[in-house]
Length: 52
Image 1: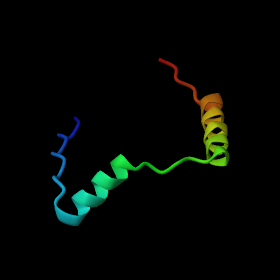
Image 2: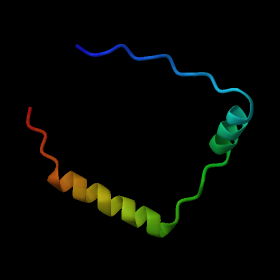
Image 3: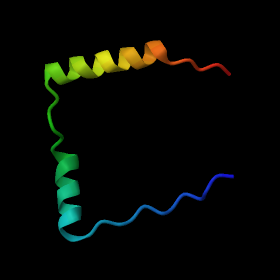
Image 4: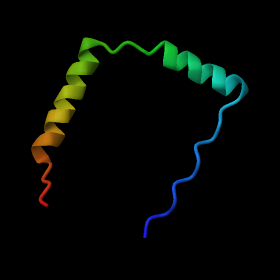
């Protein structure tokens, strides 16, 4: 049987400011990072076997 999902904690103070800044100013992804992510995705997709 699955365990109940706990409530998400509320952020306060400096943690909340840092989180809000990170949401408003996302880090740019370089072309090299994007290429590596796509290669990884394609590899995982090729070896995945979901038999239902």
